[in-house]
Amino acid sequence: MSGEPLAAQAARARALLTAAAVREHCGEVMACIERDGSRWFAWDASALDGAAAFVEAVIRERHPDLRIPFHSRWRHFEAGGVDRWARLAHGTALRERLLADPLERARAMLDLVVPSVLLDAGAGPAWHYRDGDAVLSRSEGLAVASLELVRRGALSSDPDWPCRADAVALRRVSTDTLADVFQVDAGNPLLGLAGRAELLRSLGRVVADRPDVFGAAARVGNLVDHLRTLSTGGRLEAATVLRVLLDALGPAWPGRLRLGGVELGDTWPHPAATGGLVPFHKLSQWLAYSLLEPLQVAGLEVVGLDALTGLPEYRNGGLLIDTGLLRLREPSLASERLAVDHPAVVEWRSATVVALDRLADAVRRRLGRDAAAMPLVRVLEGGTWVAGRRLAAARRAGAPPLQIDSDGTVF
Image 1 (cartoon, helix red, strand yellow):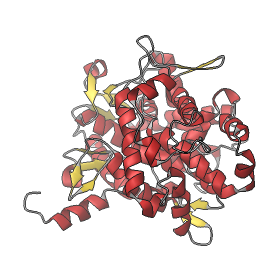
Image 2: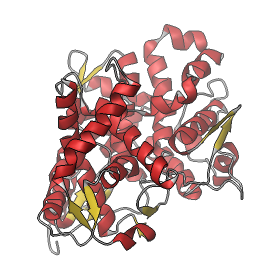
Image 3: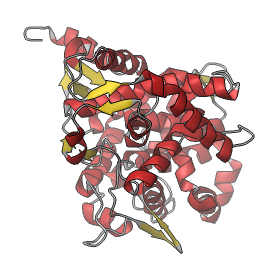
């Protein structure tokens, strides 16, 4: 607000950089929808049981033993049942070093997964990636293409250690390099290509500027070492992981809101939220989930997983619309192209965060599991994301129910 001291603004900004703030402010927007205060959406609570039954059926089909892995980027590297990360790690000249040193293996995993997650915004319906005989699209295609980027050494300045990511190499990633590796041409367009390349360059600048997090060598994988210093008895809170990511990577996001000199990242305006701002931190939370397995390799157990929220993206959000939980008041909205900061998009994403918590509770009851046995990260994987994708495939050839103009850094 006008005249507010800079320190007070910064304090308000930092308060938005938590998963708790995501739930709080999304809840305020959701309350507006539920009291019929939204111009764009209506909520139908009676559809919750049907939506939960559908998600349960998907889980039981895919994981009949209910042993569900984490929802993370690592699942996409395994598209088509091929463990590409293992193939890459075992094929490198430093294979023995990776196998003998779990901490170095964890660093290498972060060198891959951090840039890969930052590149994981919607690719658009026309783009695909050829990996041998496999043709992959959307998240799986982006994941495998990003793995190829690392395999070629495009993110490393050390010719003896190509499968790493450091500031020197990240800052020189060009749009042409990304287009070449991601097989982009006039007949295979990738949404937000230039924005993705700039995001990698921004990552390089951030890594160089934060030796306290990424070490003097300015290597992405050194984040593991920093997180180890924040653990107690080998246990690390999920909220701490997210806090570190939001603090360290916040300046990487292009053209976003700032408050008190603090970068707010994936935070957008809406009048129903206290302070007028709603944080989502979708890619940062996706990254936090994707760090769980590397941190396990490093000997850390991440606890308090349900402190993080569900991911407000178009598969989970599409599930709400396609199961009737969220109804469009203006059907014409589905034919418009909406900016990321459009109030309808903010409301859609807010409802997604809140609804995923409710769906998770309903699904757990149907499965006879509690939150300890079935944390939200497993419900998402089991789960809501796949259910949303299946409905989109059946109804719109895979397209989401709302069309978002993306710069390649949010959806």
